[in-house]
Image (tube, rainbow, N blue to C red; front, side):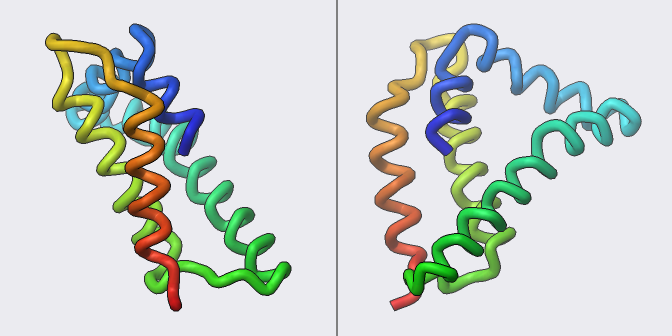
Length: 107
């Protein structure tokens, strides 16, 4: 999550919204974007949860894909909300996302 937030806070990261818009109109490009963006994020989330479970830690109260969707959509919406106005504050956003993630842990 931290890497994605920091990426979206950069000038290059702010172009990601343009790529998403293009993916809506070009299914082939949308598939590529899915494979390089969403699939690795889901795999990373599954790995994190598997490791946490193996250590006996509490895991999310919802399906991991749902949690990932909630966290990523919050991050991306925050990034798009700031378009053209100011860069996203990566540290503040990361703090809020961590708090949101903690609220989703079963417990």
